[in-house]
Amino acid sequence: MLFIVLVFAAPGGTTIVVVPLVALWADMTRRCQELGISCVLWESRRPPDAASIMLVTPESAVSPDFQTFLNRLRWTRRLDWIVIDECHVAHTQMVWLTATLPPSMEDELCWRMKHDRAAVTIYQARTSRPNVAYRVWRLDMTGVGRGPYQWIESEVVMAMAWVLGCEVYYSEQLDKAGVLAWFMGASLVIAATSALGMGVDIPNIRSIIHIGTPRTLLDYAQESGRAGRDG
Image (cartoon, rainbow, N blue to C red; front, side):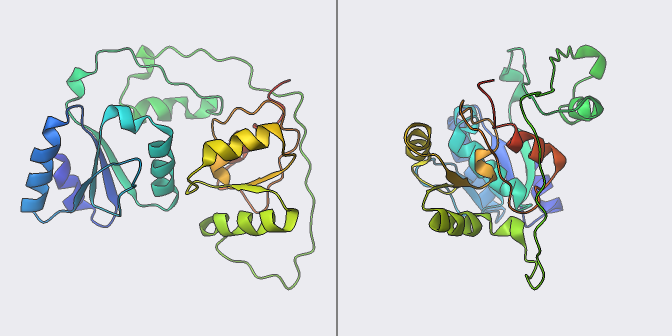
């Protein structure tokens, strides 16, 4: 229960606690209530409201719904800590996969994952994408105000979808799988937030158009990399 100290040290955000045994949930919830700390359980069908501590099983922690929720916390800067309780029960070799991490960040990744860099074996393939080209269109934005674009992504893409007459994809959407299936079959255009930019493998995307500035260059590489995945 040492993670409770973290909550007292940095109140206001959310601490994710991965709990391997459901039997521990009731005990943790009881202790948090005794200390006056809000503690909720993750439910995929009903994402919980904001809480200081959120308990989740390892199986749910790797689910797409929880990953979307976790990214939303991170993007809104409400994610304080991720705690893995009873970590000694994990005896399986760890494999980390990414097509975006640059060599300059390998040491930082090992440090954040608490692994000695010398004990980590890295296999790296070519990261260049000769079939992907980049262009920049400069628009005259005179008279157009600058707002907090990163906080209103869903509103922007819904407006774009209305203008283009196409489907829309964003993290809070309930039927994301259905929208993707329709897009891969019948649609030529989809308006999406950055929720579509990570890990989604759609083979026949030909163009990615960014409206506004991506959060980081890594995000831009990840999102633009959705194009040309069929070669």
